[in-house]
Image 1 (cartoon, rainbow, N blue to C red):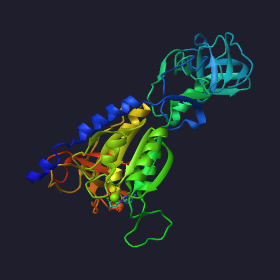
Image 2: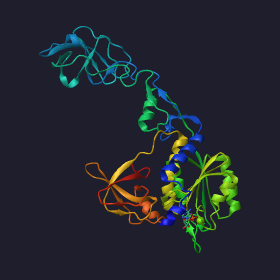
Image 3: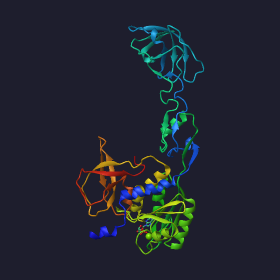
Image 4: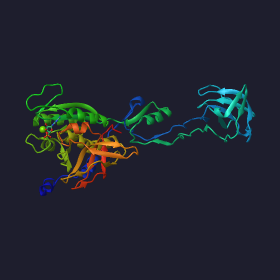
Length: 413
Ligand code: AMP
Ligand code: MG
């Protein structure tokens, strides 16, 4: 189709749009805040963290057994040592190991003075106070030096890290109760369309339930944003103008759905130009071509087409990179590839996102099966998928078993 080139003459490729939106979002980096560790899971670290002290901070035992002086052990045959005490993890007494003696010790207990080796309990035999140690222990065995895990001053966590449980554990091991994270982006969601009614309301003639309120609202939350409010608006330029203006006053990001194409009730491109600015409009993707990016007040505006699948696809490929950038997240565009289980014949030149099921075989290889429902209005295709297949621009046929790029839906892995 010669016309496709003409129609999209001013449009951007997917890669260009991603670069542009990341560049724009990087100018609206968020301030940071200090929050309690217990509320920090899934937040983005706002500063590098160095270990404030050695972890562990003292030499201790890695095993339950006996702390001994290596020089006391005979290289061959059993060595009999006299038990002179017990050191438990958390116990108060610091003991000493004299020549020919040993101290019973548990994992994590400080190593007694004089000892340099721990013999595991399984390699000993107790006979009253006499502990018989089997031969073969190595010098320094089962001893954890101070700072074995983190040395004081080590760069432990990098700014931009998405905080996972182990990161919170590491921060706690430094004695921290709080952590500095990027503030969550404040989002306003505007779903637009005269045909929309809220879930829970009966459907009148030609009406549909506003499903984008939930699918896009859910994506916002999953991607770290805080939904300030969701408004459902009629296709009325005055209402849209007012909602956009207000959103520009208190939001960091405004997501709208609908009204962004070339239909007669599609006011957003013009309105945004009037009360804010348009950065770019139209991306050579399917679905989601009319995606519009602009600014109003302090907020980045991402106007998504109303079709439910277009909304999800443009959110994942354009809005999410923008949110990640605002949050200061390190590279999150992880590219995975999977083998196609069936042929794909692409009959248009735009990049295409296909809803697909990813399956991991016994050897860990991913296989992608396109969903039977690929219409951009069919939410079922997304609800039953766990990934998008990203087919690059250009006319292409893919044979079964070809490798294609896949973008797992958030939460799948
Ligand atoms: P539009 O982008 O406004 O032309 O809408 C494209 C298609 O998406 C139409 O079929 C709309 O009815 C549908 N649509 C728009 N907004 C929503 C919404 N919030 N939830 C579900 N479908 C929608
Ligand atoms: Mg509409």
